Amino acid sequence: MGSSGRRIARLTLDNLDDLPSTCRACAFWELDPVRRERAAAAGETACEKESWVSRVLLEWGSCGRLLYVDDEPAGYAMYAPASFVPGADAFPTSPVSEDAVLLSTLVVRPEYAGGGLGRVLVQAVVKDVLSRGGIRAIEVFGDRLATADGDPTGCVVPADFWLRVGFKTHRSHVRYPRLRMDMRSVLTWREEVEQALEKLLHVVRPRPVTPVAPAAERGRSGRREGWPRS
Figure 1 (cartoon, rainbow, N blue to C red):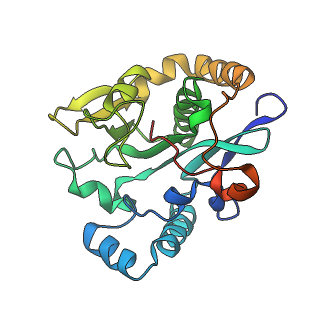
Figure 2: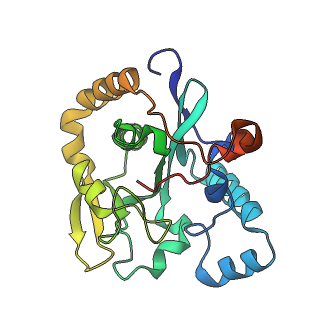
């Protein structure tokens, strides 16, 4: 998909390690607070993450999208029915609507910030959800105190981002509103979604960033540290 060097791939066990290392070892959404604390104490959150992806792939199907630029992971999104995402139950605006899929996570590398990649990932998720049929909406939790420059919770996308890409507040809250995108409205611009996705994949350009360490010391995994949650 897209021009040479820019592509979107389904998340699988084979490319799970292309998530930033902090996200790869995080089970904020995948486990309830009690199990998450136990897994963290035992150093098993990465294993739990892999088990979760494996189960969702087997029982529901594709649950994520990875976006690559010149074969480097530039961002990713993860989504699934709320029954697979016990971490969402802790939010004051839960539960997610029964007719909706939860888009829990969306992350973009700092050097690609401002290049439209967040919108590209949302459109990729929308395209997949539309192709499945029978799903009436996508819902998300947003953080009103987080900004595009950083998320204090580390796992919740800024509410303002969701509003900018087409979500509407479904249940308001001073900190964690739940937002919704109705698939019936999206159906009217399905072709535009695909055309916009192709166009944005062609124009993405990385921005230079100041390295935190010499390249020889960082290695491949080091380049993925510190991705903003937006």
